Structures are given as C-alpha cells and as structure tokens.
Length: 178
Image 1 (cartoon, rainbow, N blue to C red):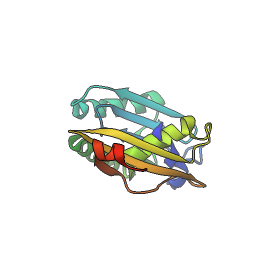
Image 2 (image 1 turned 135 degrees about the horizontal axis):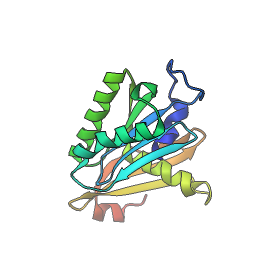
Image 3 (image 1 turned 90 degrees about the vertical axis):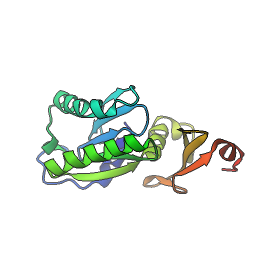
C-alpha cells in the first residue's frame, strides 16, 4: 500500500489502459519482510512474506504471482518503484538489482523510494488525517543498538521530509528533542 502515494506524480507512458493514473509495481526488501505491490492510485494488490534472509529466492516468484493474479505483464506497467532504504544492505541490493533488471528488460522507469517515507505515507493514510496530525515520525530497528528514523510533514502535495533519513544510536534517539 505504501507505494500508492507516488502514482499522481509519475507521468504515464504510451501504455494503452483505461486509467489515466500510472500502474506501478513496488518492491520492498529492506527489512525481514519481503513485499511486492501493484497499484494504480485507486486499488493496490500486495503479497508479503516474512522469511528473513530468503528475499533472493522469494522476490521474483512473488512478482510473477502478483502480475499473473492481476492479469498484467511487466510491459503493462508504467514504472517500478523500490525501497531504497535505509535498511538491510543485502536487502537493498536485492531490491535495486531486481528492479533494475526487470525495468531494463521491459523499458520501464525506476523510482527509488525512501523505505521510511513509504512507512510514513502508509501510517498517514491510515490515521494521520483522522487524528489531525501534521507530522509523522517513523523509526525502525537498525540492529546493533541503532535506529533508522525519518520525520515528515504533511503539506499540500502529501508528505515531505523535514530532514533526511538518519541513523541514530538508541540512547541518542531517545534523548533527542524531535
């Protein structure tokens, strides 16, 4: 679901579909959760698998299954988005290389997306407006006592970063005045 917020900003190619909104495939492997999503701004289909250190063997079959179940091919897409991190170094390389290979073969655009911004957009879509929040803070476990975090502000065009995604030690993060 997190990749759907990108759709209005992506120009449609010369694809022949009824919808004027771009059709995107999203790939996320920066955490222990491996996921793929297909969205057009109105509907989103996704597959998620929680098997750490198996993303390399899961991701392509998941893409194939998602496209098959939606009745579309890679060439029907307008672009492929992927979680660019922060996150697992190996996971980031898997997402980037799979995305690049699929996009190159199908002649599609590649869209790197902050994994933290995607989480923030999903949280904002689910609860942000309902509770009147104008900021979203996202933090994930970076392991070894670290935290990846991002702070975003809701504006007219959606969420925008207040500052770049960052890595902090847990103690420093807890003591910060954010």
